[in-house]
Amino acid sequence: MASSGQPSKPTPTGQGEGPAPPGKPTTVESHVLDMGAKMLQAMKPIRKIQQHACTFALYAHDLTRQIETHHFVSRLNQDVLQCAVYDSDLPTARLIGVEYIVSDKVFEGLPAEEQKLWHFHAYEIKSGLWACPRVPEALSKPELQDLSKTYGKFWCTWQVDRGDRLPLGAAALMMSPQGVNLGRVRPDLVKSRDENYRLSTDELKASRLELPEPDQWINPNADYWKQHGKGFALDVVETEMKRMAPFP
Amino acid sequence: MATSHVEVPGEPTHTGTAMVETATAAIQSFAPINKIHQHLCAYYDTTLSFSRLSRLHIFHFYGDDMSRQVEAHHFCSHQNEEVRQCLIYDSPEADARLIGVEYIISDVLFLTLPDEEKPLWHSHEYEVKSGALFMPSVPSAAQRQDLQKVSRTYGKTFHFWQVDKGDPLPLGIPQVMMALTRDGQLYDSLAEDVEKRFGMSFAKEREKRAYMTGPEHGIHPLANAAGKGIKLQLREVHLSPSESVPRVFV
Image (tube, rainbow over all chains, first blue to last red; front, side, top):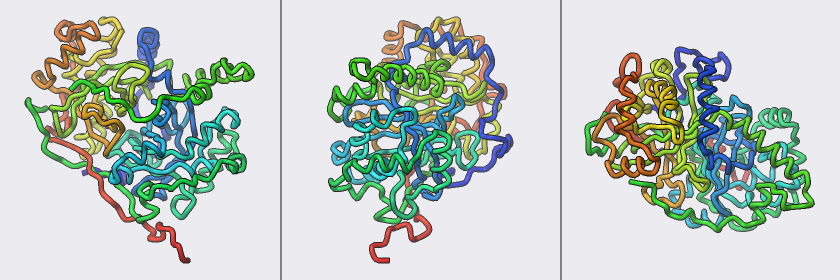
């Protein structure tokens, strides 16, 4: 069956027609319904989203596939964040996955098998790859220090970089940029990001030099590929469904 | 069954952190912060299509276990008339955990999917027509306009955080989720609990929705995991080139 690592077969609607998903434009009726819903329905969890970060991620089964991501972050408590991840910050942005971020304290409490699915954020922050567009760096600084000691777990559910016009296949595990080998982000991706958001990754890196090197022990289970040369793919498999009623 | 309320591990948010993040005017010397905050909120409004979000309440169960049923609070926006994307939370409250995502597409688009993709998607017709899928806080008649469309759609859902198991964090691998497809699947106690909390009656809604139709060509036999069970499995892969492992000695 489909695997997160397999290339997708093109749908008859065709690839290369531009990034928008196939389908008719949103009707006025739908817009009106949505606006009405917005007036009536509380959106409390959404209102908690108070940060936008632009960064990069790599597919855990193929680190040469790298994407720019837009994280919309909300905080559950001092040690845990949850992020809705999109492929841009435009109104047309596609929801491409979810990332969870935890402090090193919480991470150390996880079983080893679980830790392998996570990545460390120090390099991403210190290198300036993780950027907060439109927010003065001075405002971000205190948070960046804490963030640089966190671990993340990122599932990608729509592989737009391979041209999927709809979300296909299994979810894919993602890894974070690292300072070595396949963990390095392609310069053209960084340049393009910097131009779009009028940022300078190099300047951010320079301004973050003063962030302490994470001198605590970096858990070797995280960024699993660095120590073991192995990545992770997810396959879709048929299985027995435990059921108490007929299905479907 | 119902969402367990296990504490997420970690300390309560420090005041300093909260202040930086909400950019509150309490930091008197940071006059521009309020403006940044307002601007950011407006900016996020645009980006995340806050003005175009609507909530759907949907029941999911695990693709390999119908007996594990969860309430999934969807916050959805239109990519276009035929494609929606939803953030799924375990409650509609401010402290809700983001537990998954769902994509909802028209039956027309569903038919264009490769056959091996179709089993990952579930139909919505039964759940809409039974009354169990609804738009919280929206008057019944207003809901039906949209729900008629939803009843013809298919959804693809992954959950990352198994809150029903009491997991304090999003552990393990993503779970493919399915939706209700016939009477007798949804637990009565769960149904009653939801009806009570939202002040509604599925049976009454079902009557009002009897006129609704599902996908034009009927529910595709490959949808809903083709009637079988479905799940994801993790596999280690060799990364190439072999130089992926940093060498200590060149």
